[in-house]
Amino acid sequence: MTVQTVDATEQDAGTAAAPTPPRKTRAKTPGRVSFVGTGPGDASLLTVRAAELISQADVVITEQPEQAGLVTTDVEIVDGGMGEDGETLTHAARSKLVVKHARTGAHVVRLISGDPFTYATGPEEAAACAKAGIAFEVVPGVSSVSAVPAYAGVPLTNKSHREYKVVSVGENSVQWSDHAGNDTLVLLSAVKRIGEAAAGLIEAGRSPATPVAMTRVGTTTEQVTIVSTLADIAAEAKAAGMTSPAITVVGEVVSMRDALSWFETKPLYGWRVLVPRTKEQAAGLAARLRSYGAVSEEVPTISVEPPRNPQQMDKAVRGLVEGRYEWVAFTSVNAVKAVREKFEEYGLDARAFSGLKIAAVGDKTAEAIATWGIRADLIPSGEQSAAGLLEDWPPFDELLDPINRVFLPRADIATETLVAGLVELGWEVDDVTAYRTVRAAPPPAPTREAIKSGKFDAVLFTSSSTVRNLVGIAGKPHASTIIACIGPATAKTAEEHGLRVDVLAEQPSAEVLADALAEFGAARRLAFVEAGEPVLKPSQKRPSTRRKA
Image: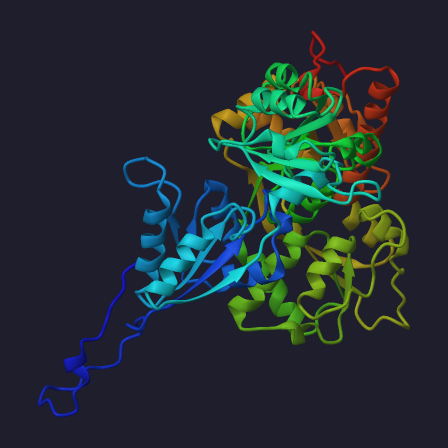
């Protein structure tokens, strides 16, 4: 970030120099620093105050690469984790970095994993700000000490065990005899020394059968928990390949995990789900999948482009303003967007729809219209499709309808179902190509390989074109991948491409499709549990041959 300052001589009223016009520059006075806790890993645990400050920042200093994803505005992001030499920055170096940026007059937001003042470098960096005369505030974050065990279904206290102690193991010398009682212990940085810690606690008098839970990368969908005893935890942690970061809980409270494990038992826990849509289109679907424990990855398969012949849309919009139409029928969110862009090109707004009746093919399209300040007059009461819209569309009546024409802006590849149905009802239709849908560019090579090799657990197809285009740009999903389709037409296209459809939504809704996949995942999980087998994701259990439709 380039910072400009104004020299004091330029502001001297006694100078004979010509006045310098004011610059939009940052003040020379020191800025301020917000030490913001980002929580243990799950981005949804960010506090309201933390999100507010991040959105207001001039400079954001991170310590983990993934923290950059929390920044949604166009600001300078500074890596506070690694120096230019590739080495981890020391406490002192981070403090200097924070002070340096604050002295430019910037509002610096320093993102710190977990809580800034709990097993973090926040106190040292805040002290450096105080010494430099820089104002600062501290925004507490959810600490991994309590959050990770909670996500593992392990309470730190209950009615029988009212106290817990936190022990930072790491490179510290620990007197295990000080922890010989029955209090719950939370061990930090103990993975490499878990054998030594367990032996020390047993020697101090704790029973070798004392339950132990170790959870790595807690609160994320990569979270893994193993439950053992003091006698066996070292061997079982090694066998499970446990690595840092991990939180270890020692005590009888661990036995409650069987009843309280809520995160790792979600129906789609840890599933990697491919969504052939853009991030903007898939926002609601991604949130729904996340609520079921899955991680979605969006791959655009369709690119929306202007029509080859824009004059057709120009003529239709002029006709709309001149009162040529009785109805405007929107069959997609993209159609709403295309008409809105054309309105903006002509300097028009929603008032141009005055006196017109508006139809929307479904709730999502109606929501897009509503952002324009317009409420749809007609939405299908049943199936949200062209056929469903026709079911509720009134026939033309010469006495009630002053005009018999419908403006239908749509994609170049749309079917003729709606046009034919409206004509049959007595309406004349201006069927106008508002936008073209073309196949998107292929995804990156690692994504294509993941699709074909079965590294995705499921693929959600939301239209027939997403099936055709995904297969065209990336190849067929692997036989192990669960195929979920939004409706019968999409399922038929998937089967025509040699895919077996495992999940079919009861309604043509992306959210309902996610719910259906979750039901499938829950039933699949239950089958594993009842069989006494480990619960494996589809990507972990593959048939030997490609599935056939």
